[in-house]
Amino acid sequence: MREENCIFCKIANGEIPSATVYEDDGFRVILDMGPASKGHALILPKSHFKDICAADAQTAAGLLPLAAKIGSAMKAGLGASGFNVVQNNGTSAGQTVFHLHVHVIPRYDGGPKIVAWEPGKAEPDELARTAAKISAVL
Ligand code: 5GP
Ligand code: ZN
Image (cartoon, rainbow, N blue to C red; front, side, top):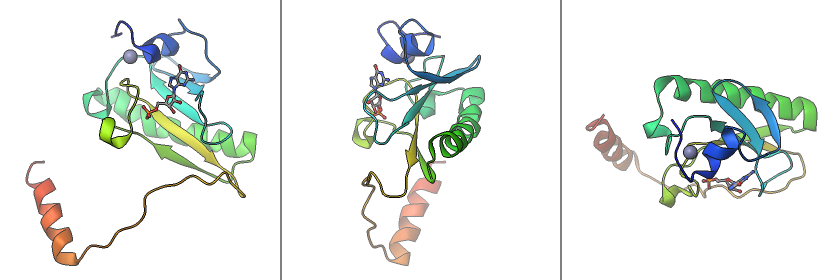
């Protein structure tokens, strides 16, 4: 399953060269060309899915264990002290390439600083109402 004109299909399948850190039958892991920190990697399934909702069960199940393996290698190989696993779905969530991918971003003591969300405030009744709206459509 490939999509014509998809840059990540071409990279994942080796048509376009990339700084590859890992490859198996299902995935290629490359370095992001605009890294948030040194070693910022992208896990690319070799098959095309536009986002996590479109992925088949085998692909979805492979992503998190692979992210853990890559993150551990960043700690052992790059001296990272932690890492973030980030996966964007949809434009409003920051997705810019519409081929499923998972970011693995090594974090180092001393930076760089990477801005995440600002924690908000919510009362328990509001949390309960919001939870009910999601569970109702599961
Ligand atoms: P998104 O915002 O869709 O979650 O992430 C897309 C990521 O892919 C960005 O961090 C961007 O820097 C990276 N990226 C986009 N095009 C290329 C490319 O051609 N090569 C590499 N190595 N990274 C890319
Ligand atoms: Zn693709």
